[in-house]
Image (cartoon, rainbow, N blue to C red):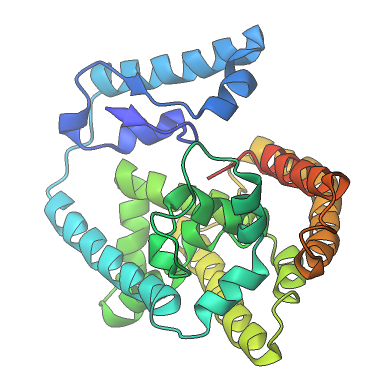
Length: 302
């Protein structure tokens, strides 16, 4: 099987049985290789985590449960609700595209040509033609991260409200089904990395106050709903309560990332208003440094 660079070793335990087999194939993004393997101590830790996960999957007994088919049906239902809610925002809300192009640094990312391929499949403003990496990268840079969690809260809440003993069923799935636990834990990490106070500053770049208020309001509501539901299911009081090291890492990184976001917001506004002749090399370099700095601090590029 293949796991991405951002995948944690524990996620392997939650994969379908057919994906195991005692072997692991890793796909690493080029920009994270030096971060994960240039330091021998960190490289050894990464390899130990992956090795121990493979050994655990192969050697430790798996919890058999007669409820697994029912849980898989629940997961399928949750996926469909979440997907529909996400698509309703992205494709079913006319103002969304305007918000995206103005409240994220997508135009800067395209101009800097950070990826190995063009950011769009076709030269059009249709967001359907945007490739996955610049799409995710833009939401990460602006600290929204909606591509990682939007729709989660609505799906979980709908399930709880429409299913007898829905909350207890989800709690049982979280406790006893590694796949569902890994899914919710990954959503929790993305919610913890989201910083809506910074995202609101990016939203201020949207020229239409009506568009800004509507779209950011939808994002803000879904964020609150997602946090509430995730914490209700894992029965914790705050995000990453069970991962104190990661929580501390985010708290320590944010004071360094936030100023870079503020610089990016200030100068991207200047850059957008400037003519091509006024877009000096100094301005381009400054904006490029903010992009690279935020990506490094967020530990995510898309």
